[in-house]
Image (cartoon, rainbow, N blue to C red):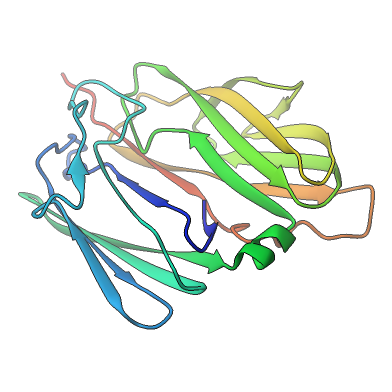
Length: 231
């Protein structure tokens, strides 16, 4: 998720591939976190503040991360996260940011979207179950849409979700203070190595004039790396 409240635990999970799409289980990863006060915190595999998972395997998949870490923000504002991985293929970097709110401001956000089940790295010969939890802080009645890369096959969707090509649409009626879980099953193409995006989740409120379309994290997509298929 891209929005938290002060004191939450922010989980960071990583998967690393080389230039051929082979999973790397001994990468050196560094994370540089810059807080709203411009103070910098560093996490690294070198000092074990980024830990290596026990299920990393170049020829298999797991819902557990290959590498993981966490931190707890204490200040409100925007946190910039810069990730660097070092392997024999060279150095790769990526950047992401999260927003941290006070407890009261967090309760006033219309919805909180959290993806609770979806790997960061996949092995093509298998299907995957994705789960999205949505906490509603305002009443909602309308359509929720998940859009996936067009190459991904959607096998099924929960709660009478309607599959339209590379999209899933759910008709949802939720009261303030409740949580809805939406899930679906997908199969990825056997073209690898490759990189795919899932989301962002779109909401169209049909019962009132309140606009849910610009919720925090409304531009956030889940990133997935597809492993190389061994010959």
